[in-house]
Image (cartoon, rainbow, N blue to C red; front, side, top):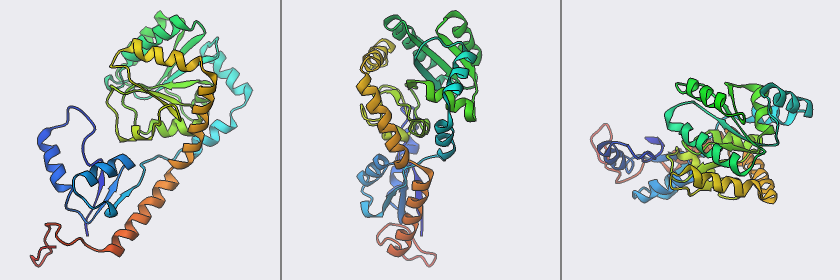
Length: 283
């Protein structure tokens, strides 16, 4: 038997057309499909693959430790994190991720300029490492409300996520969204940016924001400002994150994989799949 595990099609605009065509053809022929997300499962079914032979595993990471660390953060820990960075205000945006071009850090900083102009008590923290580290440090040196925290892990990262109002990650939202859920910190993403399949987990105005900004940081900032001034919305987003932390977990993913494998073995090979057995007979 043959099972495929993956995206089905590339979510990126610069994907090679020839390779995508090959993938679409091959995607119709395994005995079972293990799809990253529910939306990927729907796309694979759209290729003509039997939906009853698709398992959506809901790709996730092990966030239990992060959730425990966030729960253990004390008021003293939060105050220490604030003092360590020099934070003065309570409205805090946090970027967390690799400092690479795909993350559109210029967009993040430009939007931060706009948010700060509208909300004088807003501050932005950028944490991570990568080729744009020097650029981020320079931008932070030019803005009293922008802080570069370098890479943070464990309890230090948990404290930053706990004190933040939202995650400012407009582009390339992958498994960082499961960290957002674990921390109860909603993520605000851009519709116009490219994202891995896990962006499917973001439910607009339920566990985060999916902002239709047309690639314009000013429009992204406007939506953020509107959200930050609507306290009931922020509370609802936090509650949605905490609920979905249980829905998208490594434990749930492992269980789905196991159930899929058992179902595939019970169903047996597909007939008419176009593949051939070692004897040369079509299956």
